[in-house]
Image (cartoon, rainbow, N blue to C red; front, side, top):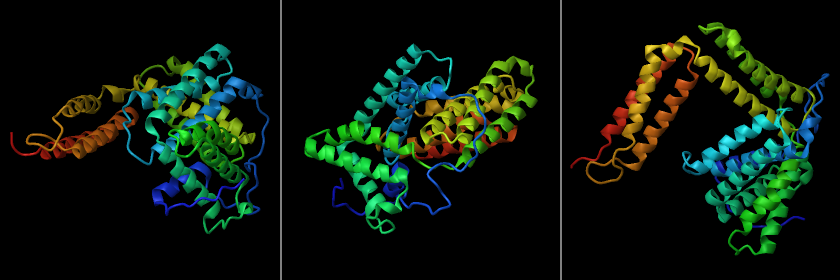
Length: 367
């Protein structure tokens, strides 16, 4: 049932979020069908992914993704335990759900913790008004936008399902009483998210980025194995786990698995890749280089600078200065984790030193 609502002109950022939530609505021409255009290949049976607990974990991952589409449009503390606990559980879910050997007890425990952490995150960081605005924006993009002209036939199957999820959630919130605090949050959690999980199963994804990801990761791992100073055989178990994750992603894509399962497999591969890279870096000569140790120590020193007095008074540093320095630190940390050349480490050292100097120059005079 369609709910006619007035909506305000939306910003470019909000429209981008709506596209992420549902797509931009136009059904592609006959070139694109409702299933990924990749050929099927003989594969190991994947029925285990359809058991109830694994399916719930895959659904929770999609719900977490949809929630992040909202919070990415405004600032929140990315160092908070709520955010980091949720990311840690996301990564555990990636690995466990895709592991045939994971026990039902293990999966159930992760599901329970993941669901609680997601609900806590939503309740703490998202307000009724933000959900209401997201619903209105999504409705505009998917239905009232001039490219659609209130003609659902122009939408893909997935986007049409997302549109009806929005309408159903709006009605649910209005039935609860839109003035009632928490009505839109409840509609988001109880109606919108479950329906979007089903809608995204119908999403027509491009297989190329997933296949390219597996290929790129393999090439990088091989280069790292060739460069380590130790015995590559010491990493056989982690290499095997990584290759199983890469092959599983390829298998799902090539068998036309639904979008939610493919995203879960990509997350699993990302975690396996990062774990193996960390392991190989500990066996790599770059870890023992002067540049590596200099950047590592520099990061530790600059983090202490973040303890400087904050404010607008004499001798204090403005809030914006801390934000800029934090971003520089995060960038340096990423280089420390991923660098494969000494030149990358040198450049990161130089940029971090400049960022610290810029920070110190912003101290309010006096005191």
